[in-house]
Image (cartoon, rainbow, N blue to C red; front, side, top):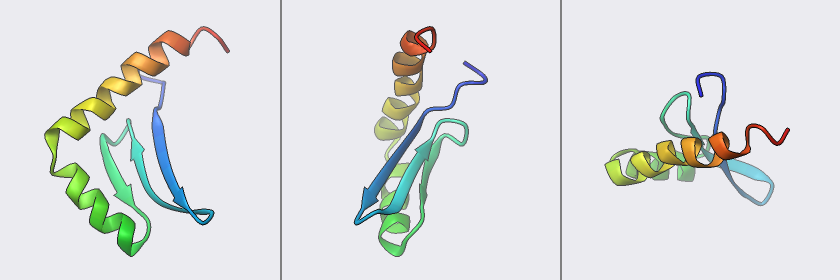
Length: 66
């Protein structure tokens, strides 16, 4: 799983405002709204743990499909 990257991006009105990147291991905000929510989400260990587990759950099962 070292070369596999899980990315969760959230958009509003065609503008990306927040992204979770499994290589970084945290949320990154791209707008004022996104930065505020990234700080809130990064301070919740259960959300960060769930997103890190998603990379193993989703990517590991689907890596052989492509």
